[in-house]
Image (cartoon, rainbow, N blue to C red; front, side, top):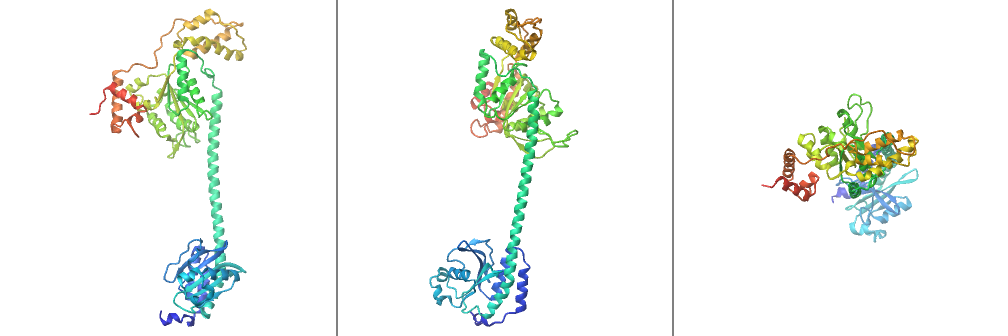
Length: 536
């Protein structure tokens, strides 16, 4: 080192500059900036090579700032001082205990530091450590040292230290108080944000519960065909077996059958036996809603989404979240909405009308129709990809004429259901009437039988069921499904080919064609053989 550096203790320090530096510290309220500025001023004013600012904490020390005249000052944010790094722990403990400034002119010759791990390893020459006191409290510890200069911290340096620390003590206390207040304000702001978020969630939940309440009240007013599936015929046993097979899964179910056969009851039985039974079964009749309103009914709308949308509306898919939605008469769903429904089936997401936000739902879909969807595909009124996605597990509900063994059971069931409400007590159905019920064609199926029994109850004056209606010959009713036509085969072949090309003819693995079509790989291979589809 040069002679000038060795004689630093004899160089006079400018009192005016020291006061200005101290005043600058007093004006700083940001704790991070103050710590950096404070250590910089101390190093320059006291003429130290390096140093650190620390706090006593839980029997150890926490580093608030560290660095040297040749290095950038670091503010590590209160890391615990590791033994043997940055400062001599023997000196720190002594100053922390006594509250007095300690100066070591030659650390290598000081017996007190002979076993200090930091001094032994780093071999500093001169050390100065002082408490930063404010109103009798320890605000911090200042630790400064020089490697190359003996007696570096003389009388002038200690006077400079006193001037700087008189300002720094107040500034440091104020800055910490300000930091605490700011943190408290930030926590309060965070708590307010969380409260607002919670209130928004509660408002959304309240809106949903209110919508569910209105829907369920409307459902309670509806009279269902019967409380459970009634029947012991082979056809009904087959339906019951299929219900048991599919109920425990989340598979999409497609119910096929004529009007009045009880497709909604089957849907309720599937839902009631599923893990979703504690959530609502939400019904939508796609045939009774105007095309202009069905999208809003299914997916909801925002306020102002269209003329007359005075409030936000929760759609049926949102109501059914966690439960099941029953889409009755799915064959009447407008073509432009079929793509949106397909997206919900595949991705579980949609947007309300008038909103850009995507909503995600977990809904099981059960669809029903009395139409021939294959013919609708051939006519271009139903999407083949939606058909295959719905037809994961088809159940055909038989017409009443194919389950005549169940007619006596159903007749007595409807007598029991309605006689109390009508003030009647029936204990006999004449054989002639039962024979007529058994031979009639029932074009209206179970619903027609229930209506007939209710009218007979009204007309019966005593305990014997009577009716003045003449049941004619059986009426021929076309089945809900029809054989494939050549035109349908062509449409199906083209659709399957398109999906195979999109999937690079993959029949197994993730993203395969069978998965896209909603079919098992074996079923897809069968359809390919039937339609003559082979890869070139």
